[in-house]
Length: 100
View 1 (cartoon, rainbow, N blue to C red):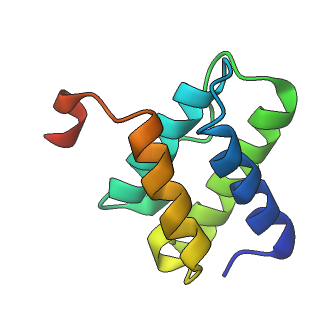
View 2: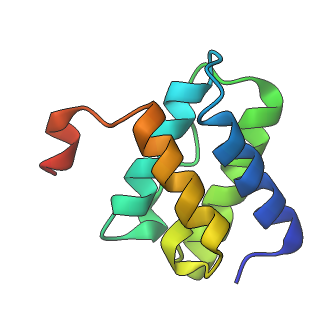
């Protein structure tokens, strides 16, 4: 599935998504959209306005998702499920996003 470096990038993004800094909401929504996607391989690899290191992590995770077709819930790590629950509580997607 994901390499160790890709898992590390995903964990950094998950921690960032609940951090309350400028990138947090964008990353949180991106993670939730990926998790809820019917086609994880269609994940966006670019988000505007992110810091350089966060952009690199998003690109690494997006490439891994495209390669494997995985999303956080299918990676088999309980910490991902807990992190995604915390992310959804911190920055829930707008209601119209749920209807897609």
